[in-house]
Amino acid sequence: MDDLYREVIIEHYKNPGYRGRLDPHDIQFADNNPLCGDHIEISLRTDESGTITDARFNGHGCAISQASADLLVESIIGKPVEEVKQLNKQYILDMLGIDLGPVRLKCALLSLKVLKAGVYGLGEASDSLVE
Amino acid sequence: MLNVKEIRKEFPILQREIKPGTPLVYLDSTATSQKPFAVIKAMDDYYRLSNANIHRGVHTLAEEATAMYEQARVKIAKFINAESAHQIIYTRNTTESINLVAYSWARANLRSGDLVILTEMEHHSNLVPWHILQAERGIELDFIPVTEDGLLDMDAYKALLGRGPKLVSFAHMSNVLGTINPAAQIIRLAHEAGAVTLVDAAQSVPHLKIDVQSLDADFLAFSAHKMCGPTGIGALYGKIELLEAMPPFLGGGDMIREVHLRSFRPNSLPYKFEAGTPAIAESVGFGAAVDYLSALGMGQIAAHEHEITEYALERLEEVPGVKVFGPSAEHKGGVTAFTLDGVHPHDVAQILDKDGIAVRAGHHCAQPLHEKFGIPATSRASFYLYNTKEEVDLLINGIYKVKELFG
Image (cartoon, rainbow over the protein chains, first blue to last red):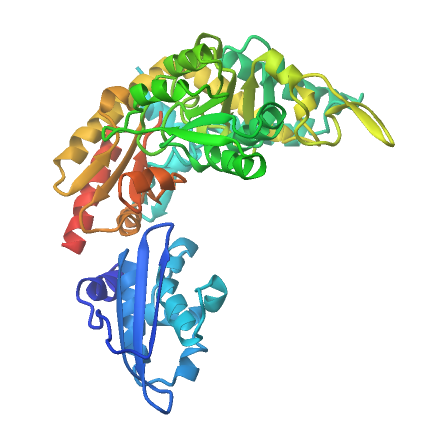
C-alpha cells in the first residue's frame, strides 16, 4: 500500500502530465471541496463525433485530489463524451488502485464530479454525480 | 507528578497496534478522548446489573438506576463547583447545551436588534445556533477579533461592550489554537456591561480545574466524551435564577409535572430540561469519568499537559517548513494546529497514520478561524493525560518522513 501510494499518488502529484488549461476549449468546469481547500478545474476539447480530443486539469489541494485529476484527465482522452457521462466512483477507485476511507474518497472524487458536471452542462457539481 | 506509564495501562485502546508492530500514538484527544477501564466497566456493570428506566419505577432496578443517574449529576456539579446539582442539566453534548441556551433562554430574552458577542475563534457549535437565531429573529452578531498571536483582542472586546450586548458567548479554550481565554475577566466585563455570559467549556473542563462560581459564569457547556467519558452525553450548567425563568426546550416525558389533553405543567429543575428517556448508562460513565479525573487531580493533569505541549512546541519549531498557529505555551492548552509547507494537511495526516500516529486534518469545525489566517486547513495534534514526550518525538519523526516523501 505504501509503495502504491508513493508511486501512483505522489508521482502524479509531483509530476502531473496533464496540468494546464485548454484555450480554446469546448467544455470547462471547476469546483472545490471547501472542507479542505481542494480545487479542480477541467477543460476539454471535443470533435464533431463527440469524442474528447484533449483534456487538461488545473487546481490546488491535497495529493490525492490532484493526482486523481491528472490520472482521470489522461484516461479520458480519446473517449466519447457519452462514455464519460457513465463514469462512476468505482472507475476512480480502480484507476487509483488503493483503498480509500470515506474522507479521502471525497478528495479522489472531486475531479470526477467536476468532469461530469462539465459534460452534463450543469450549473453546479453535486455528490450524486459520483455515487 | 502523573505516573503516565501506569495511567496508559488503564486505557485498553492504547495497547492497540494500528498494524502489526505499529502501536497507536493517539494525538487527537481534542476530537475525542480515550476511555479508562473504570469508565468502560461502570457502563458495562450498569447494563449487566442495574439497567432500568429512571424516575418512574418503584421496583429495585428502577430505584438503583435512578440513584446512579442522580449521583452522577451530583459528582458533575461538584467537579465544576456548582452550588447545586439542580443546576446541572444533562444534554447530548456541548453543541446541544449551546442550542438549549439559544432555543430557550435566547428566544425568551432576545429581540430584533439585540446584540450577541461571539469571537472569531469559535467552533461552529457556538456560531451556527446564533446564525439561525439571527435569520429567525433579527438579532445582531459581532465578534471579538483574534490577533496574529492567536489571542483575543481585549481592547476590541471592551469597545464592543460599549454597544450594550445582551449576551457574550465564547470558547474558554480554542480547539484549534489552544488559546486559553481569560474567562473570568471576559465574564466580569460582560456583567459590567449588563450582558449574560455563556462559556463553551468543551475543551477547558477536561483539561483545567474549573470553578463556575469563581468564574461567575451564567451558562457553561461541556461534553463527557472529551473528558474520558462516553459519547452521547454532556451538560449545561446555569445560574438558578436564569434556569428557573427559562421556558422548556424539548417537550415530552419527564420534563412535566402534569399533563392533560390540552395542556401541561413543566417540571422543576433540572428535569424541566430533560425530556424523554435519557442516556442513563452514559450518565453512569460520565460520573465514573469525573471520579477518574478527580482522583488524578486536574492540577496534575494540567501540569502534565503543559509540559508535553511546551516540548511539542519546541520540537515543532525545529522542523523547517512547519508553522504552528496560536499563542506561546503560557496561554496555550494541549492543542497544536500546524501547517507544513508544500504538503496538504490531509496528506500529512495520511502519512502519519501509516506510522500509527493519529492527528486530525481539516478545519476542525472552525472555518472562519482558518479563513482569518488565510489557510484552508491545518493538521492538528492534541495532548491529554496519557500522552508522552516519546509520542511527540514519534510525531516529529513522522513529519520529517512526510517532508522526505513530498520533497
